[in-house]
Image 1 (tube, rainbow, N blue to C red):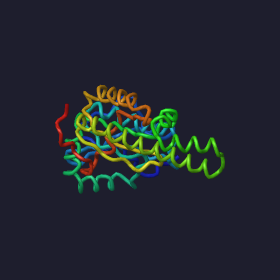
Image 2 (spheres, rainbow, N blue to C red; image 1 turned 120 degrees about the vertical axis):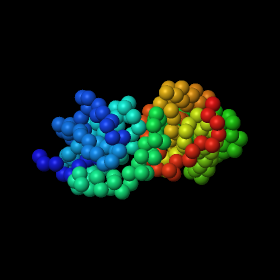
Image 3 (cartoon, rainbow, N blue to C red; image 1 turned 120 degrees about the horizontal axis):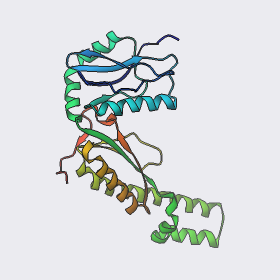
Image 4 (tube, rainbow, N blue to C red; image 1 turned 180 degrees about the horizontal axis):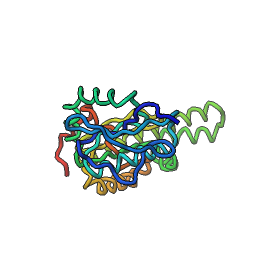
Length: 249
């Protein structure tokens, strides 16, 4: 098999050591190397033919980024970033070097933690007990069952679940934001009331994760909280992420 371009994993400060014993994407795992432009290194390997988002390759990509982050700040690339050749990579890096340096400075010592809030599907008894309109529609459907009654009840339940999840998500966001350096909104996810990523000091990540779990338990009747992280700081590689203006406590 022949390589099909250059696979790009990350941008790091010049001289950042590559982690030992960690390969890149492909089967067998590609040999990872760096190329240098000014004060920056780019972590690359040969791109495997017919690259696909296979689980082993996704995990290899993420494992390399997390191990790199142990040695300093990392500007991570999303999975599947392939350039035609090293010259193209270096030319683009040279054009954007000052911005990349500033981003690495901003991400130093940080990890990303993603929090999603979804409707609490397992809390229907509580919803019926607390939502008068839903309770009335349920009773009406029991007295006069039929398609229209079931439809109205289903719409009311779905609306109440979504509204309660959104309110819980807003409360959780208010609780967590002061503990983060920055907050970034994630893409819209169907059925998801909240999708936020938090830029958190690596040294405080365990405490942050613990607080999220406590909040998830406290709001379990209103939202299902899904947690991912620590992650490479994918959501904070641009200046679009909102710095948190309040004091961190």
